[in-house]
Image (tube, rainbow, N blue to C red; front, side, top):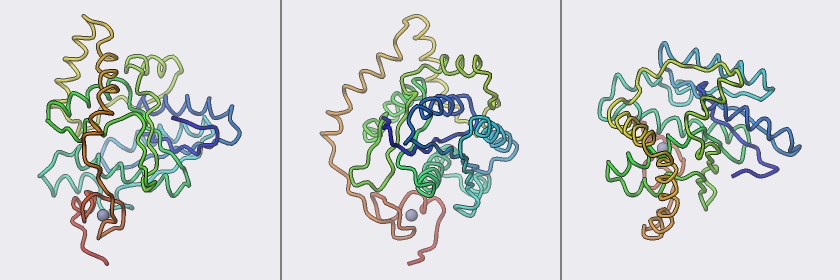
Length: 263
Ligand SMILES: [Zn+2]
């Protein structure tokens, strides 16, 4: 996942996972003089929620001596998530947020001249997503959710998930033991439906059959390659509106923002 001379943009939300990841990567980075870290925080514009997290992220970065970049939906896309969600109802808030946040992190990481993006998804996140995609019947996504995402054409920065094999409980324990101050209140838009049921189900099974989460994760590692080999390769082209790489003619971000054609 990581090389000695990487410039890693770490996506830091201010929660326990991302602040743990930042701390661990900072420890590692000190041993590699040619490696660089930049923390990236996205302010989606969620009233009464995001401000505290940004503050905690800033504090941690300062303590650790890591450069910190904060970008906002408002400055990048002209609208806050609250504004988008109140005017659009076709998708869940998490769907809008996920697509826009990924773009925001890519933009901020490129701007910082990073060559890699690290996100703090833990084992529980990964296994929940695997099952969620199976429950939704979304085969393409099943293959796409992986710990190391590389775009062979180099148009997207490589994305890595260094905590993908660490159970959520252990990440939380590390955060507490290290005295990390993190945001505990959940996002007001938190998807409560299916993911929550899957989380509870997995925790129940894990309790009675320890190791289940790892087993699901490993099964998917083995299945992914054959799944990918059976899928047609998707070619990327430039979005007609914003110029960012996309599989169609207009990218998801522009579709969500109803951007006017500029070119
Ligand atoms: Zn676009």
